[in-house]
Length: 401
Image (cartoon, rainbow, N blue to C red):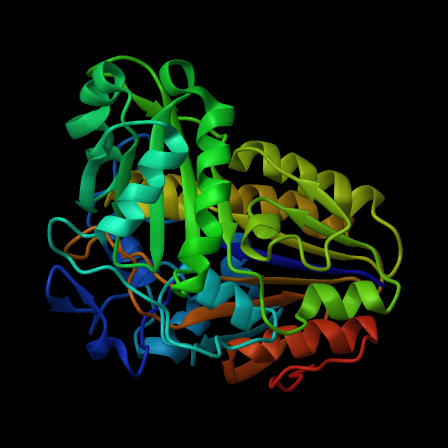
């Protein structure tokens, strides 16, 4: 009896009741729907780069994905109308944020108990004492950017100047985040990680959710991020699903950035890499992890490579790749195993701006029979996984199993 909780980062399904309170470039997120709009674009032949035709997700749809989108937002996506063979529902977030920590903390049983600090969308975006601290730790006379922006745009705008000056690139987004980009060769990876780790306590005191190291390589006109990103997140202030499981004597595996998001709380083994590597880790854990274990996985590239960049074709390709890989995993689950596929927020690649979108998320379950779950809370996911593992739950959620 094992549990696998898999987050397909940013695969929202629309319908958030408070979407009108969240914005992209001044436009409310009302009507944003990551999965529906990708499926509609594919059906119109508008996502043909590296793939073609209607969105093909037979495994996810067989678990109930199409019906979950319909439940969340009132519209059945084109090509996704299979009769579900799994348990399916739509989850609504209560935390005041559409970011990675908010979504994951609540999925792990802990709605965020405070309001995050967000930096103003103006230039300079950061208070001078923060910039002074960066300069003192980095040993530089200044920083670059000091604004809101997309990471890839920041590299295009400031990467060459960063190499010439040695100054770190500091920027933020609509999330509660402070990001520092630096070249692995010219600035140094370890130097960047040390800078972010030493800045983190100051940012966390301000209730900024994450300090993110954004290393990159390449030369002007061809800069590229590397997989050595590291998130320094606020430690959850109360026990979460991983703690519940670990304290009950269960082995907990974190796949992807789960370790960063939870500051390694309740985690025994960490497995990192790009999404293809993470899928290999997940596959190995399906085959080899011990009875009673919890595996908590995040696949980030839907969000980082395709959602923020508003890349429809890339997002559709990633979904179809994941669907194929999931189809290879499900037959290898053991009797008594539970596998839950969900998401943490939306990132509609058809939407204005480059930020996350406030949406409900799917909850799709293999290993618990078939049928509708209805509308559930994010925290209900943690309670349900705990119930399956026969682990005491301490959060606000209710098990839907």
